[in-house]
Length: 105
Length: 105
DNA sequence: GGTCAATACTTCGTGATACGATGTATAACG
DNA sequence: CGTTATACATCGTATCACGAAGTATTGACC
Image 1 (cartoon, rainbow over the protein chains, first blue to last red):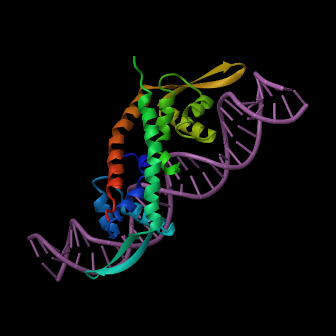
Image 2: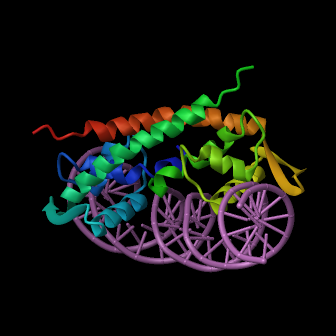
Image 3: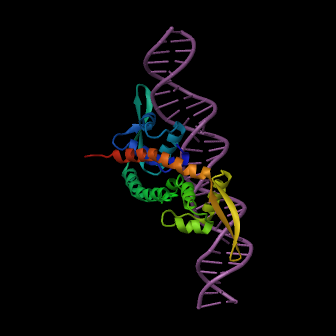
C-alpha cells in the first residue's frame, strides 16, 4: 500500500488497536497485520509520538522474564479517534470527487 | 483537514482535476477548493512531481498576454487514478477496523 | 548444548512531501 | 495610481514511514 496513503491512518490504527485492551508493541503489529503492515521502527516512532501527545500512557511490566511495555489509551486518544471519524466525511467527499471525474466517451 | 490525511489524496485529486479537460495551476486550485484546500507552493510541487513521473504533460500557451501552463493527463496518469481506486478498498478496510474497535460498555 | 527462529524493544539516517514565506509579473478595477 | 486577482516559481523547514542494525531473552529442534 502506498506510503502516503497510510500516513493519516497509522496513528489512529494504533490507537484503535489499544482501545479496548492495553497492548504492547509486538502484539499491536500482529493485530494490525490483516489491515495494515507496519515495521517495528515505524510502530515505536508512532507510539512515542502518541505518548508525547498524551494520547496514551505507558506502563512497564515483566512477562516471562521479558520486559513488556503496555500502552493504555487516554481520553485525548479516544478524542483523536472521534476527530478522525469526523474528518473521514471530508475524505469521502474527496474520494467521490476523484471517482466522479469520469470520462464518459 | 489533517495534513497527513491529505498526503495520499492530493496527487490523485490534481489528476482528477485535469482528467476531463486540460487545466492550469490557478484553476486547479479553485476547482479543488470545495474538496481540498492546497496552497500554490504545494500545487506546483505536485505538478512537477506528476510531470517527472510522466503522469501528465505540459504545454505553454498565452492567454490575455499572460503565460499559462496547461496540464494534460497521460495514460499513466489515468492508470494512477485507477490504481488509487483499487487501493481505496484497503483504505475502507482500515477505516472499518478503526470504527469497529468500539467500546460497548 | 549449540543453532536458530520468535519475541520485544531501541536508535540512526534517509527520502518523501505539504507548507509558509517570498518573489516576479501582468491585467483589471476604481 | 494603488489595490486586487491572476499566474507561476523557489527555498527552507518540519513531519514522518521506513530500512538497517543492534541488544537481549525464550523456546524449539537436532
